[in-house]
Image 1 (cartoon, rainbow, N blue to C red):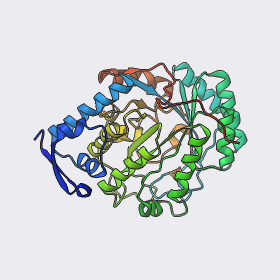
Image 2 (image 1 turned 90 degrees about the vertical axis):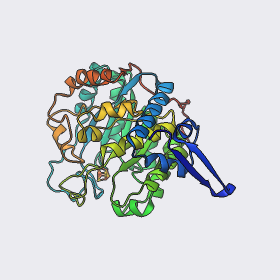
Image 3 (image 1 turned 30 degrees about the horizontal axis):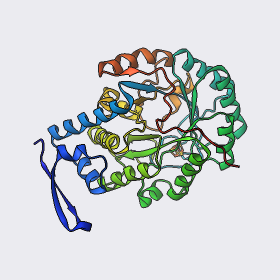
Length: 367
Ligand code: SF4
């Protein structure tokens, strides 16, 4: 039922406040209890109202623009062993690759030809992908394409972050995955959440536009955990925030865990749009893997970014964090016409800008 009454027990103020969903959605900010309430909506009319409001907030900041980010998956080597991930080092059943600098620059030229103004370099945590190699990739790409460069190379040394920023990298994407320390520890036995957050804050301090976000549908995860994820995203003052569904990989310890629900993921994205307002939020490839119209549904729930892969063959089929990833058999250069049809079918238009953060200010490099 629309306009169902939401009762907030404001313990601090010793009063009970009754408001409708409509009124709640008009608020400028939300408490953790309110976030949990919105994440728990089940009634179709209520959820439609949530998505409608999220779309309006997205359009207030971004209009109908959808930003494309062209991803090049430059290495699938990884020294970590995250329980859910098909690239984990214990997985001996994949063909490992590391692209050369020239191969990466060539793929970036395809991104340029497609008119896409952001190049994302993504990999597992691969120390043989040296600081020097990535520096060369950044410099050579910037020399041939007037674009923004996002790095998504996992946790690296502070010296690496600083060198790559000085070389021309603009953004860094490092998902926190979950703000529940016990769950984080369970998934990454030798990494710490605290450390990851310190890396993000360092990157922000030296001038990167930063992106983070969670995974929805992890074992034992509760709505309160997800609300905590959203609160963390706000505290970090992110430029980009990604909320992707868990999709299982048969080659991992999480092989038998059920995939996340598309509807739950869309709700998180919509609540994130209301709460985080002007951040970039992608409709992820994982969402489109679970639902053929996942990207369109994501846009209607408040997303404003799509990240097509431009990883060339033969590597394209070997970057499998999860099973059944879409589009890996396609020629990446043909993706744009497909995406263009999908985006316009839900009232979006592909932006021809770099799609920098709306919070962006001129960076300064720390000494
Ligand atoms: S999630 Fe990232 S760090 Fe973890 S195993 Fe996969 S590629 Fe490596």
